[in-house]
Length: 522
Image 1 (tube, one colour):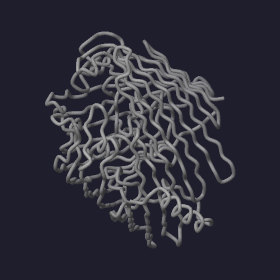
Image 2: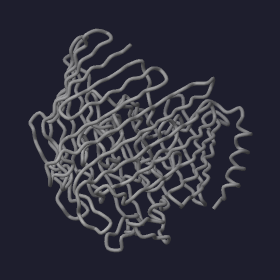
Image 3: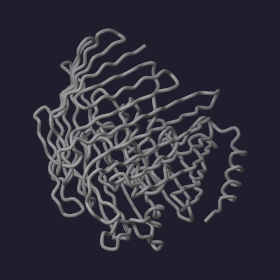
Image 4: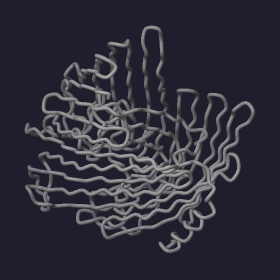
């Protein structure tokens, strides 16, 4: 393994020879053969940030503040890489990015499906999500029973606050639990450089947790802070991210964790369609740390008919990762391998999880094909890393597969716009529905618009303890009223039919809620 001094020296050398590099952050590298979808998170209509990524996930266990991670194409949450403003933000301790505390605030999401490990690292075998914060001279307020959220900002800064409850986080009691969050984002441009910052402080309370003696108690509180900063230029991106979390039972801190990542990426187009790059990572989780360097190559060839062939290669910690993609008209295909070594928490554990320094890396292979709005995929992983409740540590638990088909389109007609998302997926992962559907109808004019949607998730299988997971079936309506070019009113009615169910065993969801919003542009 490279030590930190060697990494710094190699990175400095690369930065020197790249002084004439072209304007390209890593997220702008073209991924030939992948399905790329753009989405804007909309606080007016979305109950959580995940809806911009997967519109069928309108509920999360425990409401806002509860754990909510992406499972693209039915893969494990640790197999989706998340970048924010150009830098990776997956937690270095556990490997995933928790969208549960993320507030929908007009961010732009770029969802790149298929195996992308050669460009975005081993966490991106299932796909990659790129988040770009937006800034406008606008303010937004939304309120309802036991809930309010407010955002305000200009071209450089945005400040937001949320406090809300959907009742009890767990379905075995009736006490109201609340989630609170304060967020500040900024973006400043200096010549060819842009600086983004994002900071969040949050707190959520609920009943029914475990204390240090493994006794179930009430008065449970999770507090945390998330921070990240990125500096991007024409040829270089550097960044830092930090995630602090504390867990309290009956007012006593029983668990805490701090994870940090230092990141740098430099790349250059050495000739038309050929990009070389180098990445450096330093990851810290409590007293444990890791450093690694990765070099990558991306080649794109486009013929006169605009058909494309792409090849990517990554060398990281003595391992080679390959990706091949092609596009012929509306047809696309991509295939790749992946090698994910155990993350810091899986290797070292903590007071609740035993260490396992003998874990083997996960080996994965995947292929995705598609035509226009239709996609199909197949993944196979060996030596998957899973938590063993008997030994209370992470172990290599054999392999798993994920395969499926999906159709995702937005059809415009003279009478309105029809959105359809239908997916069938078979995976060995838990908490992933076999069938998921979202059908929506949007129509309107300069003064009034509406969207009516039906969301369903069927055959959701069993939880980790064998408990059956209930289906999701809900109808939602959003009404918008443009009072003037500067003022807009909205009415969001979730779960019109007032269906109550458990989104996960022990966690209630659903129930009709009504929110009124006001959007001001100045």
